[in-house]
Image (cartoon, rainbow over all chains, first blue to last red; front, side, top):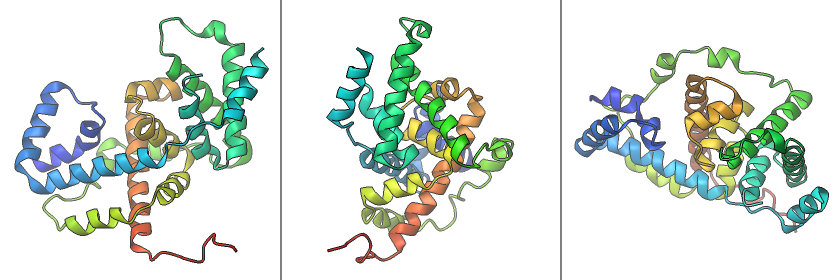
Length: 71
Length: 179
């Protein structure tokens, strides 16, 4: 795969949506291509930031209210 | 109610305020309870609950705003979208970009997410925060797989631009600090 083919698949690669053969090809390219590797790391990092930023828990009062309504 | 935390934070991002988020989650559980006969045992309960939440949220959006659809965006071919991918041979400003992310706070990320137009926001949350697969999201929102991918692609691009913007702009010490 060349850089363009890899970048087109980068989202799917990070999202684990590629088939094993494509994963292998993308991984192989990333191992040898620092600019694409950088793009990959950036994408993965933003995903982690987003996940970390959205880690709120539901208030206990909400749980209680829902349980009460279902009785 | 093992899925309530995910439902709640998704509702928070969609409604942008805790009271409405609680209402939305409560509505989701009440609908799920009312329509529990429609749930197929053995299928994915979490995905089913998120589908109910998404439907409830979308119908709310339709009532309160003009963000009724993204047909024109969905009509864009994936190839067109991917044509915007950064040229890997170009100057990436690698270290600058990564360093910029260091100054991003959770509150900035949440703000950036909440500013995304609705169809993109929902897709990005379902994928990036809740970890649903493209197929699950497509089933949940009743849209084709390609539309899921284009919404994610567009949404993430907008998100990155916003994060980039926040990272570059100086801290605003006066904002939200009343005494």
